[in-house]
Each structure stands twice: as C-alpha cells, then as structure tokens.
Length: 475
Image 1 (cartoon, helix red, strand yellow):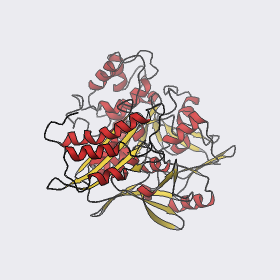
Image 2 (cartoon, rainbow, N blue to C red; image 1 turned 60 degrees about the horizontal axis):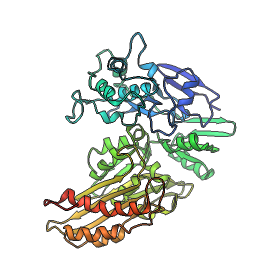
Image 3 (spheres, rainbow, N blue to C red; image 1 turned 90 degrees about the vertical axis):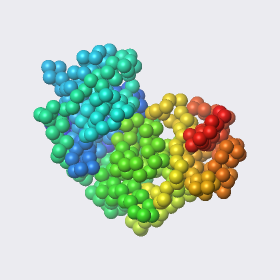
C-alpha cells in the first residue's frame, strides 16, 4: 500500500490509511478543514468547492474550482489543493473574502466558503476583463452558477464579485500561476479489499482492464461521486485515467477534429476555441462550471446514460469513437455505439481514447435543452442540430441527435429524411416538426410526461427555424 501525499494550503499531508472511496471533502473535514461543507453530495450546490492546481494551456497553473464531494482524494495524490482556509485568515482575509464580508454576502455562512473558492478561481483567471458582457470588472458571474445560496440572496454576492479588482503583484496564488502544477504520479491505494489505481501509462491501463474487466474507470469522477455518496456503491477496483497524456490530446486536420476522451469539458472548450459552434452551444448548458472543470466527453459517453447532454450534440456532428484495448484500436460510429439502456458495444477491456468529429461542419448548428432550470439541471429533452443549407436555400443534409426520448440517445432519422432535399422554409419545417414529435419512445417520469416530451420535440425544430428566418414566424 502506498501513502498518498496531497499539498493542502501549502502543507504536505500524507495518509497511509485512506480508503479507495474516500472523497476529498470527507478527507479534508477529517483533518479539521471544515470550511467546505456537504450540501447535496452530488455536485449541485457548490458548498464543497475547493481549488485545485491544474495545467493551463501555456505550461503554467490554472486555479480550478471543483466539487470536493465528488472527487476521490486518492485522485489528488501528489497534487495541490487550496481550501477556503488557505485563501486568507480572519485578520488577513483574501480579497474575495473581504469583498463578500463588505457587501453583506453571507448570512448563515454555510455556502460562503464554496462561493469564496469559486469566486477565487475566477479572480485568478488570466484575461479576466476581456469580455464586455461580464460584470464591469470583467468577472464572469456564470463562474458562480454551480454555487447555491439558500438564505443570503444573490445580489450581494454578485455585488461582491463585481467589486473585485485584479490580484496584487505580491499575491502568492497569482504568482503560483507562472509555474506548472505538480506532475501526476502513479498511485496505488489498497484498503479493506478496495483498490484505487492510477496507472503510469496507457499500456499499463489497458493491461489492467484486460486482467480485471470489472474495474470501474474514472476520469472526472462526477458520476463516480454520486454513485458513492448517494447510492453507497463500492467497487473492488477503481482505475483513474484523467492524467494519461494519450487521452488528453486535441488534433485538427482537414478531415476531422479529434478530442481526447479524458480532457475536461472546460479544457475542450478552451482548446477548441470556437472551432465547433454546436459544442459551444452545448457547454454553457452542461451542468455547471464546477462540473465542467472535471467532467469529460469520455465519461459522459462511457456511462451511456440516455440523458447525457454530450451524446445528442455529438450524434448531430456524426462523431466517431476510438476504442483502445491491448489488442489494438477500432473506430465506432457513435450512432451505432449505444445498444440499450446504459449498454454499448464497448467491451469491458476497452477504453474510449478519443472522439473524432468529421469536417467540414454543417453551416447551421444549435443545441436545445429542455429542463426545469435553465442551467445546472438534468435534461427532460435535449436536441443537437447540424443542418447544411445550400446557397439556393435547399437542405443538403440534416443530422439531428436526441436525448431523453428513448432508452438510448438516438438520431432522428425520419426527421432528417423529411428535411433533406427540401427548401429550408416554414412549410418544410412544419412537416418535419410533425415527424420529429414522434421520434423515439418518450416516457413519463418526474422530469416530464411523454406528451410534453413529444411536444418539445415538435417545437424544437420550429424554434430553430424561427432563429434563422428573416420573416416573422407564427408561434
């Protein structure tokens, strides 16, 4: 058994007795760092948020806010963490903490440390101030959209964020950004028959999956944490892959864009930098920044949930998956990947290595999500559109991905056929919308009725057309 060592607020903390399923939140609180709280145990409230030193795109460090309740502490072996206690002290508060106090942005205080950490991540974001649509000081208020306040109200919190200046020249956390974060190291934890392993490389990972096909593979751990916290799941072997270099690459050529399966969604968005408009429409609606800082495309597709938001967008993009095993690699069309409820063609010994998006992209793309909340919620219906409209106004090709309307994410093949070859005009769209309302086999559950889902499918295509039409379109 190996000790794990995590640098917390500048101090190395070693632990030789950590269990494989211990979350970072529980581990920190057991050591007296009780600023981070458990509010929901599933990554929705942000009361547990802490800062992790993550790699930026220039070889330095990006202070990244994450949900400590979802993250196994073993995944932080060798890494660096800052909690609310490490930001400042009562006698020398951090600028974020001082602003929260000055603007009366805390009542019970339960959520405040989490807000402080999410706010600090944005405070240290390079280039803050470049976006006119943010607060006057450049603060992106959506950076706090994963944090829930139950009593203070958001106006004073917003005011505190809007009052922040830039970090001082002698700010140690700002200076820390110029150096790289700690390099990941192989990790092996074995406690009471439960193991956590971070292999040294891809070859070791694939060998481990061949020998132990029942292993649970984790990258961002956003699904793992929910299973552990709310369902009490304990698996004999957890294999962490988020630091494998082979799964963290982005390649662009004339024929395709290939994205590593272990890159977080936030990293994918940053590195693609607007190359795929459909994904740019997806990202802000995918959970919260705290989740996007950890969640991965590989994980979202690996769980094979019918309500995973990535699949409808990637189906519309005609994405293909590269699956790797010790026997080699194979490529699978995402439309043929899902075989049943949470079932896929991926074998237990295989790993999703990358997602390949063919080029050129469609000239009309959109992502529509229907949920009870606008942000940070599970979809009732999700639709990805990628439609090619020719110079003469005719639909050359249509690709539409659907989530939440069947046991698996699906392509809306009948709707695509109803659009293709016809003019992109209201009559065409109305005909196709009536077809789209019957796609899939919607069910009724606590999120929406089957009838509501069918209606939302029907309206989604009309909504897309209204966004492109020059004339007024009746609702």
